[in-house]
Amino acid sequence: MKLVLSSAILDDLQELARQAAPEEVCGLLFGYNRTVSSFKATKNVAENPLRHFEIHPSDLIAAERAMRDGGPNIIGYYHSHPSGSVRPSKTDAVMAAADDRIWLIVDGQQAAAWRAVQKGEIYDRFDPITLDCQSTNGQTAVN
Image 1 (cartoon, rainbow, N blue to C red):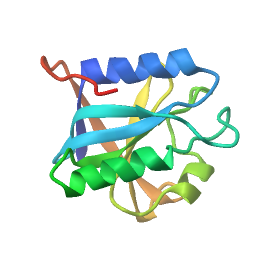
Image 2 (cartoon, rainbow, N blue to C red):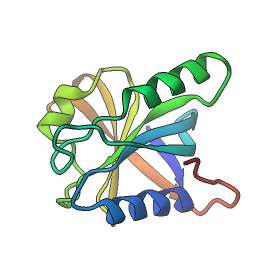
Image 3 (cartoon, rainbow, N blue to C red):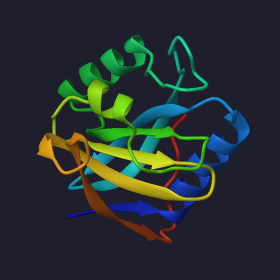
Image 4 (cartoon, rainbow, N blue to C red):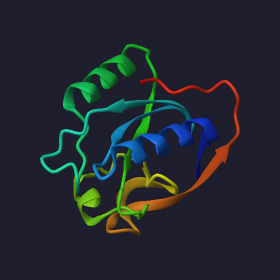
């Protein structure tokens, strides 16, 4: 299994992570069939954004409603680990629903993709998936 992502979108996400460091950034990934077509940056409302992330609930609810009404399909989430590790943390595993959605983790330079599942190989919650970063013209970020 793999996640397809344009190099332009990945560059945008890495830049957001670099600009926000040492705080974590977060947001929503949109697309179909494990191909990211756009993203939406959201406010990190975690109590301690230096160590955790929480997508603003109103952004998530609005995106879920839009999806039900025929809008963009939410395929997952992204967030940053300013410490440099693109592996999910134990906290990520506790917070993640086993909903088969993608978790993309960036650190300003590197990135890795994970699928949130029951009985995953990482902390019993995540399975690693291949990240296929393509140089695709025409894909843009939604902010």
